[in-house]
Image (tube, rainbow, N blue to C red; front, side, top):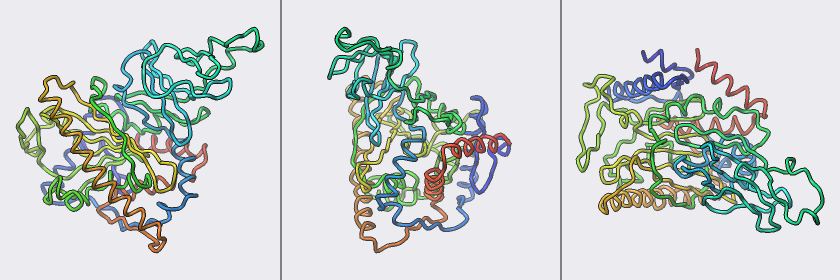
Length: 430
């Protein structure tokens, strides 16, 4: 059954895209893989140690190439659906110099537009809100929420134009599994669904479609790859986080790859099931496949290349998840991360609300004061230029795969991108 749902190729597990029943079988197969390794006290290793040039983190030219050829060419997860749940909800954001406007349409679909008035390029919206139309604050041109230009101020003075030729530029947009992706290239030929390699079908297991956004914040970090390395690494957990998670915390992870997207989870035959204020340890080895709880099937960290991490948590006995959205900053040694704390149910009592805040605040301390503080020190040291390479061990396969894909996709042509992910689809179907 595992062979039917997970094909092992080049040392990485590749998932098959398909229907939800198939997705559950894939999740169960991954869980059985983790259980088997946990029972044997083993883990899966990469073939060898990998060396990455230190300049990959410090070279401004490399950094600029990555912004242009990764963040401005590849699909990016720009928002959880629950951030814009209602028709008219909008969100304006800047990504690597591109002003983006998201707008929930009347029919519930998502629109993604270049946030620039087609008159002089002034941004139409800022922040978040709800609007049926957007009026430019410079000269008063007005656009519908679907991007159509419907009003030119003082048309008798401005002159005659064809309004249909001056609508907002649209970006490719795709919404699935309670998440929204946008490609910041209006002419992109790369299908967002193909790019996700069926991974979005597995992400449906979180059931984010019905969740609520509890809170969010933005943190400053080091170089985007320095920061992202930490999300792909369990090796550091009992060392760096000994005062928060504990020195006896696990440091092993098996990696499951779907194209450049990866899930990492600790090999163990046990799982913790939170029920109310109590933690229940489940013996997964003794459970039938149809008895495995949904939250157990999505345990671990799910990363969406090139900049998303999703991990489950519980605040006050309620199921939640932190979605970390990472973007490059202005300079090579800077990044910023928006943390979305989404919850299965909106906390109702004061105690539940406080417990959720406590959980989210704890995660801020872990990331800001431990992960990113360490990353900034690491970044400063690497900037000395006196260390030529950094190492990723056989137990750090996630970081190896991430850097290999980063280099490969940054160097690919637009046509190459289409073929790369068409090939991933063919391999997954074999």
